[in-house]
Image 1 (cartoon, rainbow, N blue to C red):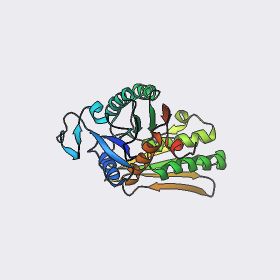
Image 2 (image 1 turned 90 degrees about the vertical axis):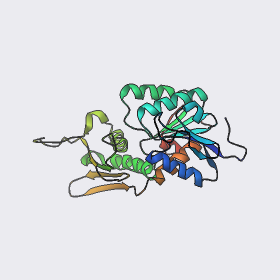
Image 3 (image 1 turned 90 degrees about the horizontal axis):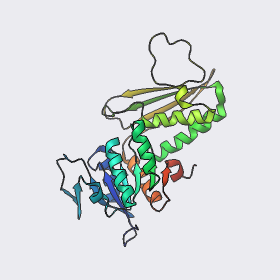
Image 4 (image 1 turned 45 degrees about the vertical axis):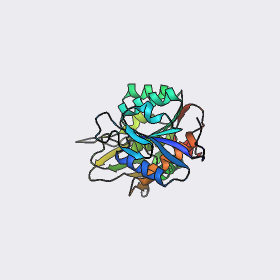
Length: 267
């Protein structure tokens, strides 16, 4: 499938009326090289049938939503993402997904579908956060085992999964840099008499409240000094901009599962 006659990337949006879906639609409305050609929501959504742009009506049928698309951008929930990716795989459409909270069986199906079409999955599509993950890995590698690693994340009260996918990605970057098994090193709860902190632990604490789009702080704590790497999001617009950048990159790539590291040529 190719771009339209004007060379614009044709994009369908899953969860078009969600927090991120609205920002994706806004980014597309401002883009000169991309356009909205499909919009998907759940079967019970009150706005089904509403025309969002000329010729683009909100639908609950992914095949109809993706019929003219070069790429799909999806910020939704695991069940909706899997339904969308199944349709995209059948249609041969590139898929950009920011959904987190997949159960193991769901993630296995997601990965299998990514063998049929190019899929960019990331827990956070901020370009700055992608660079943060890269820098955190480098910092952990250079500082070595003498620095304890702790991660603090804050998100809005409506976020369903904890810790955030971004916090887990940061933990994975630290573990990879140190040659650790992240599942063995991860500590996500502390209460009571926990004893001395294990030297190889990677702590993650999740805070929830208000409407905060997302904050992540990585603390590498040495003896007499510490290094902090922090990202704070003020709006969701940069997440949408990063997802659109990923969609531009994914269109035309061979089937496979990619991350923002590949989009930015960091890996």
